[in-house]
Image 1 (cartoon, rainbow, N blue to C red):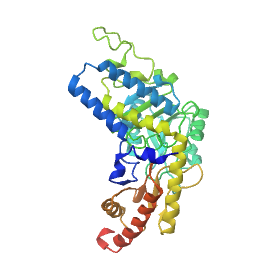
Image 2 (image 1 turned 135 degrees about the horizontal axis):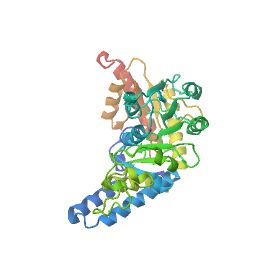
Image 3 (image 1 turned 120 degrees about the vertical axis):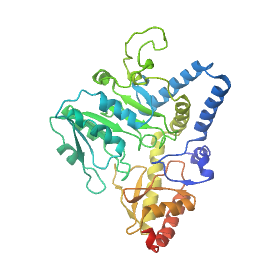
Length: 386
């Protein structure tokens, strides 16, 4: 692959060694142009070209479908991952005594919507990891005849542990349990095929590994489950014939489109589509191999520098997130020191979190490790930084 050609499409590289894609990632130059093009069109023409932008939305929907190997009709655009989770959490016909199983270390977006069901008598069961891994046996032990749904991240945000979506989905399918995947920390760098994997629902925002802007995300639902969800957030665009504004006919769209209740974030979706097109042109398998190569390089270099690798690096567990431990050192101080040297990394759960993408380079990894080694020593020597 010509990784430099992709790198040339990332303006952030002119200013930063950017290794924080698990937070808010930079958008691509193609996404930037899509945003400015939309802004210019609306500024100069208002809604005159609305048909053009409607077609752009459908073009991006087809790109998302390619990314997931899905039918475009099963894809809805949402504001963020939380909205997608909420569609399912608020839409299922829960009964008192039902339970939802999630991971103890989940990001709050995949916790609070399920906790919000307590008034309906729904229990949330949180399965703890053993160190840096969530064991499928522990997950299975939490399931019973009242488990309605399992909701897990594709990749856990703090540890970088990659859940085995196929095995967990198969376990759920065998027991008649629905399976929701919060895909935000994997989609764009790790392939996910919803036709092949036993997933029932999926949501992801575009502002991380998909290199899109905030406020433009995706929700996918298996078609046969559409009618099992009570439709929430319904609006004028939820119905068949939604463009006939003078006719009231409450016939909901028979697919994911019913959850696109009103006017969409056209500029954001167009920009997201531009970055997805870039990723598809490179190829998800190639990106996965590149990112795993870079994270392996990071782990090897960090270990030589005396840093502890927290993330599981077992086959099948690896992702684009590497969590590092520096005993006795405040990770916030390390992150601040790195920012001062032009390196963007982050911290989660008391550890340093590094998350490179495919356009990053080997010398950036080595520069990060050298900087960590230097500043960890300096920070450790400052009591107020501990």
